[in-house]
Length: 205
Ligand SMILES: [Zn+2]
Image 1 (cartoon, protein in one colour):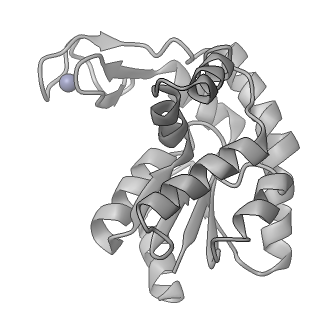
Image 2 (image 1 turned 180 degrees about the vertical axis):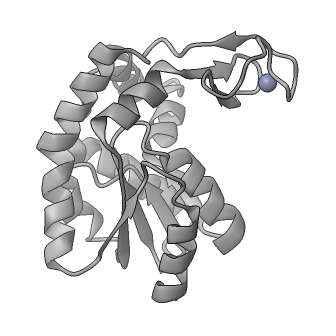
């Protein structure tokens, strides 16, 4: 079974992915990580991708889908996949379905105020990457490795609003498309959704 996981920024896709990976042994593919890795290579295409990402611009969906396909093919991954944050728009929906059967689509739903508060309170360790919330964590160093805590440079209201607008414009049509096919499961990610997730996984087994 292949799952797609979608949701606005800071809706908890990372936490959800880790949980599904550990408990249900999905192979997690984060499109963001995949593109960042791709952009580090020393090829003209990688350089172009790197420049586009660094400028906060959106990559062409045909290109990103091709990068995804090459990665899946190289690693022989076509089953038991958790595709995180992709397909991003209707173009990639059509392209991805040519090589990957999408069985279920999980949507993490969170209110704008929840997301805003999470982003403004989010800090992460500059050494190991562990993420903390200023609302519950009061030390000024990482309790895992002692590293320095920093705010991510892209954690601002301005960036959030741009990403929310993109999500509405590109990804909401994707959700509507999969809804019509009866594949969508929406979870309330304003609160702890892990129980909802377990219930869902029982249902879709
Ligand atoms: Zn750390």
